[in-house]
Picture 1: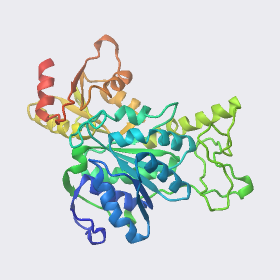
Picture 2 (picture 1 turned 90 degrees about the vertical axis):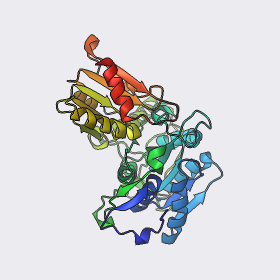
Picture 3 (picture 1 turned 30 degrees about the vertical axis):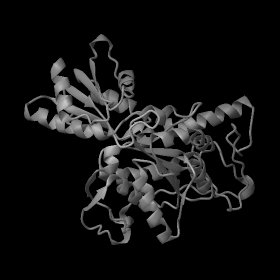
Picture 4 (picture 1 turned 135 degrees about the horizontal axis):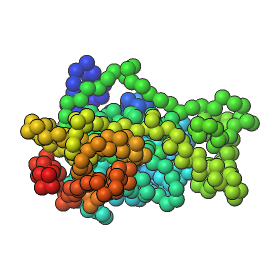
Length: 387
């Protein structure tokens, strides 16, 4: 695997592995601190960054476990550094408490989860989509989640940069989910020149230190972020806190804090949500699939169209927040929707929730959780069984 980033020719396509594309995307986004613990199938991300980051004076550290890995990137971000970790399902489970801390303290950082089969040790080298609900509900209490989900190596690179941009913009941990096969496959990727990239950095405060409120409420529910060492005094705690960060039991301050966590996401859905519609203009049957499964679904749609079957694909690139309005609109005119997932059913109820049209709605499911990819043939056969 090539890790000599300086010699990559950005004027022509380059062959990259998915995990390598994530590492390069993170570097292009301005990654300054990586704290992680190696785990299959995400280890290549850490391996590459351990070689590349010291070349530019940035920091890579292998922590003793995933709990400390998540804690380390929160701490690094509070000092003003763009930070990231990478893991898989078992490590993502261990990170949940500190992910909740990052949500409550509104700390920008990126967490990459290259999924494998579970629960527990599960299937370290087999694909699965079993962590999708964990990305939304993994921590206790009400909290927002931004989770991006590529279906190609090209998108792995692009959505890594987008994850950093959204984390910095909305002051929150952002999740990037890959399927094991996306992480390990190699594809031709176009890497844009760095000057052509849109890179977003956190908003620095412009008020004097004595006026600064680290968690200030405002109509957009996004507040400037000072870093340790800049001369601003603020308090950081996982306890529910007021605008200056100090613990509070005042009901109006508690509600204001929780509303801020929610509304900085729900008030900006147009900016956050991305959905691909593939041959949906005249589709009578729709396939809803994400990540790796969407690749098989797209091939199934192409084959079906060759046989004059009006089948289309709806693919969310943003899993959370779930694209309610987009999915409802795209599926409203179809006669049937097939929800294909590599799990026992984690997104099917979300689709039903936003597209329920009474007794006339027709949903069919295709669920595979044996460590084997759902193929185009599987999708076409399942559709033919009910048509």
